[in-house]
Image (cartoon, rainbow, N blue to C red; front, top):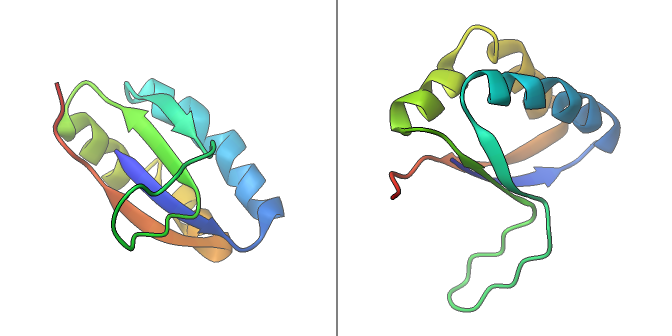
Length: 91
């Protein structure tokens, strides 16, 4: 799962981060990158903050994103940030 997130209000976003981490882990995910330095090498994509997760499979990532437990956190995230989320099958 890949997030490209632009944070508009760091206070509530910090609360989102604190609450979402245990849920991600409970759903089988782990953070691989969380807002570190990045560099665009080609194209016109201008990501703001990249968050990269690893899940056992696409169904697990989708299960987190559509879960009842994540719904209130998703709403919180949307009040203080905008972004894009994709899931991609990997190796």
